[in-house]
Length: 343
Ligand SMILES: [Zn+2]
Image (cartoon, rainbow, N blue to C red):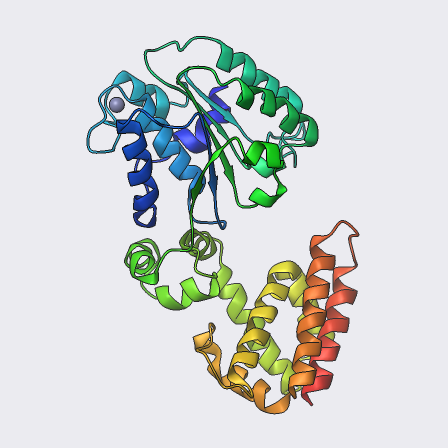
């Protein structure tokens, strides 16, 4: 079991600066002894909801919490950090037998194991805490099994469901959980934190914009070479427009870098062109690409622009779907339309 706990248990028992209101709410309920048995931590992705659940778990399992924080020194904290606290249970996507990728669904056996654990008395004094993430990955059987557990909650057991997509959960589950909502943080909260996390050369404001306002998405992207891939793509598009690179060369490069991400980036660029175009309103998100955005807004009619945007959304759905399209052909066709409309 210890291995299963690692992702949550490894985290520092602090919350992110933009999660203070949610923490305050939970501390208040805790003080009043009114902490709900089941909470739904929901909101956009990449805000650290799972880590928040981990922080709350560590706080509840700590024997000497102070100031809304786990002490990090008691035996409860040590067990938590080692991923072996007997009163913490985490349900998450499990590795397949091949050891490489994860199962898409949370299955009924995982929920049955959770229920079995929940019926036992706490091994150490105090709370028992369970975390299910991502909760929307529960299949129907698993969700129905969980429902029973929600109808008859075990005493002193706190269940946290973490999800970016609450609409995918059964209404009967939703109605039995108290919602703890997370929303995109104000830049004033996110930017100082981000500035400390990303390397000096990167512009936190630009990065936050292109990540749609989710700070942890920025950190993940900086780590995995996203900025370099983005620059290669946008440079490639400029060269394509100027006729310096043929469609198939750029398509091959894009497929190598990742078609889905490239399509998302092109959609973001097209939306900036729309912002910059006829209406001429609103600041663009990709503020470092103003040159190409302005160029495209001069060359395209809004009809052409919306046509390319619609098609990009359609291609993105195809890339994300289960039909496994030929990425090279798809990208060549899209870039051909892109450049045809440009010349
Ligand atoms: Zn402690």
